Length: 419
Image (cartoon, rainbow, N blue to C red; front, side):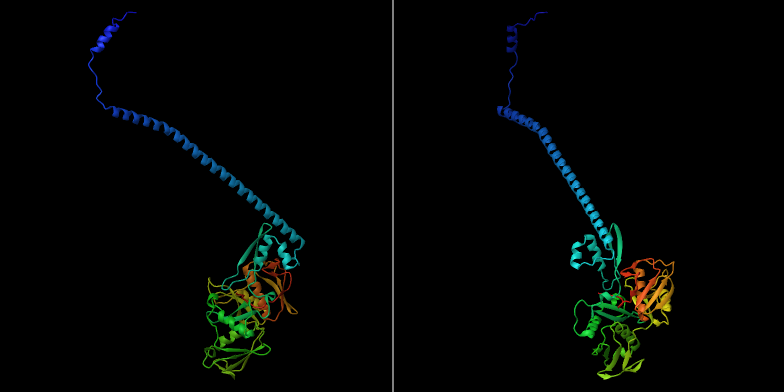
């Protein structure tokens, strides 16, 4: 290895000969810059740490939310399974009750309510549904033993509804004043004034327009009941329009008082017996015909109006002829057939106070609104002919609405029930 020519003395001499170097910067500035540089380096060192902490916090929140959602879903699933199990248990209990007593329990109402399942209570409530004013019949659905059944309520007043004297029927003209439609209220509270007071109250609250009928009431007359309730006196003021429109007025009286057990009407003018009518001439009294041999059809003004039973303007020689007319209807577009085309019979026979209708083998009765109205129309028509019961033979369905076709059906009390 070659030895260097430089010795210590030479190096020292060389350094002495170098030019002077001076730092003209202010010492304070130098210290300040060093401090700023160190601060930046410290801040840069904190950034990765803070990012890591934030990521861990976010991960913890997401994990907590996921776990909570899983727990809630599990809880809901358990609740649904429990409800399903409860429903199955109730259905089994209902089936067990039906098998033990298919004709219905004879226990007291309180005992029945305590022993009823929720499903049975719903079915009981649906059986008590009534038709509201101005609305067509509602179909109520209940689920029993996993199957849906439709329970139809009667459109008319049956004998079990009568709590004398709660039933009030009023005959109301249609829009063309060609037919008179009887509509019926059931009073929920006592109305003062006896039978006349109840009738006048019904006339005053009746909303004819909602039923698609003519606004006809109240009447400018004074009604007074006889001592036995079988006769009513009607006092008409002089110059009343009823004296000119007497034929319509008499039809209204007929379709009103026949349902109240009134047999005779007497007329007076300002307290004096006898009245001079435009078409009927002088008249002191009018007999109410309880059996006028008329058929019941369906009246409906338009699609927004309810369907109502209405007696025909024609009287028939036999109930056979009346039933045939109920299948054909009339030329009036607001008067519709009350018996559907599929409702056919082989014969109509009289047995005492009953009429027996033998259905044809091809007749398939249905438990729906159309056949329920047909059945009630037949019952009222039979009543107009003086029969007390209607019996159907060869019926392939056991019930239509609340009516049991396996037994003779009593004729009905009053049509077109409204509240």
